[in-house]
Image (cartoon, rainbow, N blue to C red):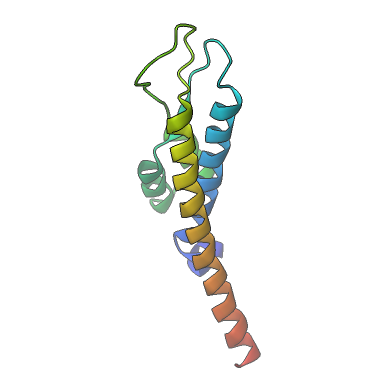
Length: 115
């Protein structure tokens, strides 16, 4: 039902939430030796989700290890500037997607009330 009601936005919101979790995990492990930063290729995951794949599976299949510009000596590949930028971009996208869904719910609510 939510797929027909919200279109691609429901899957996009779930994927952005998964991506936010991965980025937060990267930031939390910035000082962990040997930790490999991961991210979700959002475009690939969204295409997979729109093709019928479950959004959670699509996010998992599109999760990639991030290639660092300047790898640290302890093997950690987290670069805080990159993570902060990705976090900010994803937060803006999450907010925009949520606004689309909120607008759709408001429209349906007004239609049901007869406004």
